[in-house]
Image 1: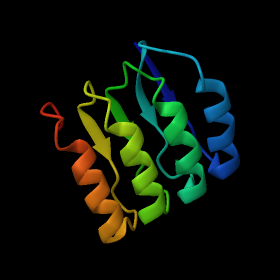
Image 2: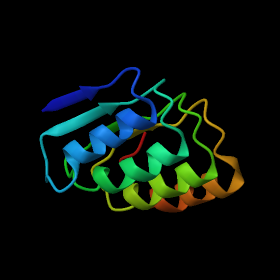
Image 3: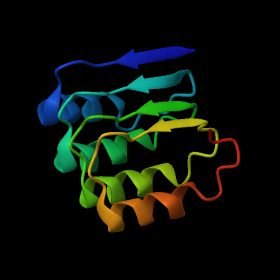
Length: 114
């Protein structure tokens, strides 16, 4: 099991992580904490593609990242196939109705989610 915690990354950090994770299938990285990083919608869009390769991801913390509808929708698309996930923290973001709806639809099949 591996964990990744990133601080002060912002959108540039999101791009760097995406480049690192893109195309690498990993079942050992289980916890990713990107809280308070200013990921924003642009960073979420980039990360959403890379997160799809983290097949063992169990916990993802994206709290306090100024995500709005576009970022939440991008993340929802990535998370819809991650059936092992048990914890997702999106607190203190402004997902708006469209983002919250996309996220609810993506997570509806995840019965292990807490």
